[in-house]
Image 1 (cartoon, rainbow, N blue to C red):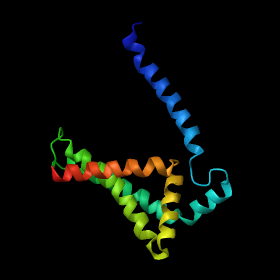
Image 2 (spheres, rainbow, N blue to C red):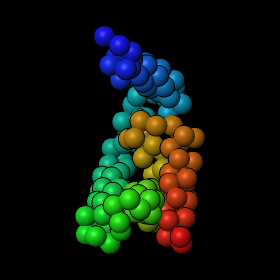
Image 3 (cartoon, helix red, strand yellow):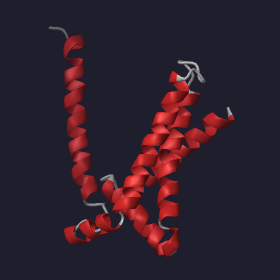
Length: 143
């Protein structure tokens, strides 16, 4: 057995270890990390908006894939992937923004906190990552 045959197994084990460590570390950064009752109340209050935001992300991913399957973009063109990333990040943000706009800025902020909690990712990680995805989508659209 040579190293090339066990390398995928080792990288999978290392990746799982890193993922487990990040999950433990990020759990402390989530909104209301020490209060499970507040987390459940936040998720319950934002359940409909979070559901539609996740549907929006799915629509963004599906529309990006349809660019390839429909033949609008060559199979080796990166722009379709960039547009898919941008739509997958932009649509949930718009759903959260417009779904909570009736309550003002504090309700929108609560919606974003609920979305990050539902994604089990701290806001300080999730939203900059989504911002980079939107930039990739804009870059792909203008290229």
